[in-house]
Length: 552
Image (cartoon, rainbow, N blue to C red; front, side):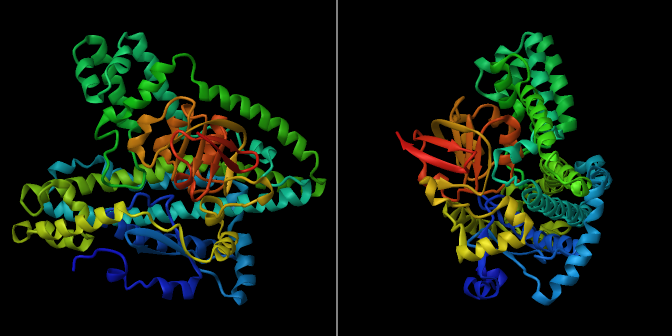
């Protein structure tokens, strides 16, 4: 039987796992929709080990990292809890090991970012189509090592900054009375730029450049992006703009429809994928609105900082401010790491996988280049050099059928106890901030409650979007309701009036970008896309972390 994941391959039994961990948490932040086999196996192998290494390197008191499994084609997370007798020693070491991130968070990140870029460099510079099979074989192995290393760096900051954020939440409430759910707390964290926002501003600049050159209307009158390319090539002005766009994409074109993916192309591979964002800015005209919003938010933040710092006892001011600065970095870093780690890191792997797929299909091992995603890493390694001996058409067909079955399934959000979910969310800082259970307040009588939110209150018409292909249906002023948002969706926060997600917490993309865009967002509602229908009128209350369904 060609089952490639789930309990047949992994020997994984849900009941047995629940006896060990108490709860399995569906990771729809990263794993929705279900991944094809190749990415699935790599994610399970490296995600768990990277989290465990980060937890041990920091000596986290509440967690030893994650144990990841696939159930029915979907990824689930279990939190590994330390033994009670281990915690005091772990706490002591943690206080020592977290200090560099508290004392100089941006300096530490700069060193790690440079380390990551050095890892990528050989893969970015290689002419992949010209390497021999033996060289491609070595590159395939090397990409695994590269992936392992950047994921370890990724989760050091994930755990470190999220733990610092939690320390600040506790200290802030203790010495100033400011609670994390207070809108003033959100204002303390707002008004910060990052590399993804700067890339957005460059796309806006190129949209105004298109208008200056007299080719902007092509984006408004021609709906097909490749046809826009064809029309641009017909004039000197169009060719000039296209050359400027391609130069930009060659440097910053790491975006793709889905961040954690090796199937969908990046903008580098297909530059016209960025045209929907250009089209949005051409249609909007005027100044770059997000910059003005961030400037306003920065001024508000500075005023709130003065107000809050005035309440901090003199003996605690230095420590309070250090935790504040590191916590403020966490939002910017979350977006920056998407650029340097998730987007660039997976693009490195995609470059090698694409070439493997082409060679397998050319020599008849598979029917199509994308069939490579139906194979296991060890199967690719076995067939790469001696492709004439392999034919995996029937294997690919069987696996693809299973994969498509999983794509059609609606996964359970958790297996096990919701109470246990709350307990492990307290212990594990990443779960707590990016995939926590909803914070229910019955007195609000809301239809949905979130795990984290960006402040503000908006009432409007909902647009339910289950994947990136549905974003083109989103109309200006509608409220986006979706399982999760990612780095490739940042531009929609200039279209939607509010955002509601199934998964997430106080440091997920929707909350961070909603806060910086000045629109309310409620994340981690778990059942938003089930309970809300497109066309429903809803009220999103980011101040109270609640959503109300008002009817049609």
